[in-house]
Image (cartoon, rainbow, N blue to C red; front, top):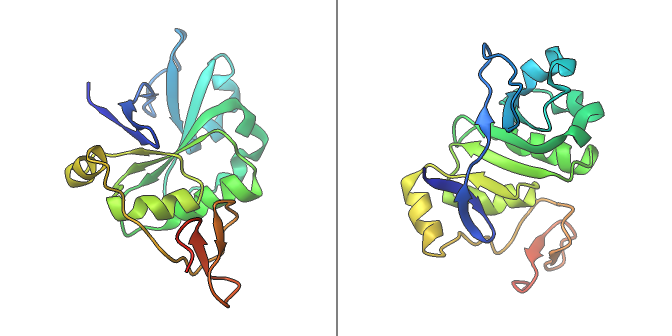
Length: 174
């Protein structure tokens, strides 16, 4: 089994099992990942699962999860294509508006240069299957963004220059 979950301290093995749409809800203990659509259709069906995570796909409305967020150990947001940015919006909604504090994981087409931007939106774990990205992260290379032109609610950024909306990671301010 390949370690493909990247966090700040390196790679680890993914121990979540995707529960397919037609698969029965298991009775044995485990860590199960369920699609948002399936969970919202029948949340009571998952009441006996001790650890549950939700898979959010592009276009899913994450606000429907608000009354259930305290049940989820992890929320995985799928990036079907690197060019589809809807996952960034879902992450911001979960972190800032819905105050979700569990693990927020980017899955799918995750590339090296996206990781710093994904972190700004609240992601703290990344399922990396893109081999060049894996190799770069294994050698300690992470893309650096010296200046952001959008506001974010992160304590590790500070104003950069005369524009109030310009932000720089702490230690990189000009």
